[in-house]
Image 1 (cartoon, rainbow, N blue to C red):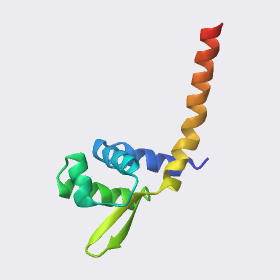
Image 2 (cartoon, helix red, strand yellow):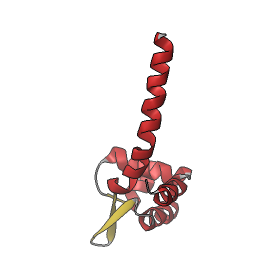
Image 3 (cartoon, helix red, strand yellow):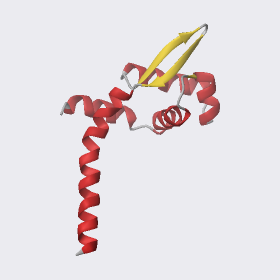
Length: 103
């Protein structure tokens, strides 16, 4: 496990606006402009743009130019490290709860 990378991703995600942008990108499921992301999140465009820049810098979000716009998508590979770390914790806890409830 690359704990340095995990720590960097979790630190970057420890912000309500960034969590909100990642959540909208995940649920939206397609490349999305900062204007549309600002509309979907209700945050000012400059705020969305600032947080997207940080997420791009951390490799959590990718951007692709489309004319004058940047279209943003999630970088699933960057978020996989969080899933790899959390999944055993969540499944262990669920199994313990199920075993405790059954016994």
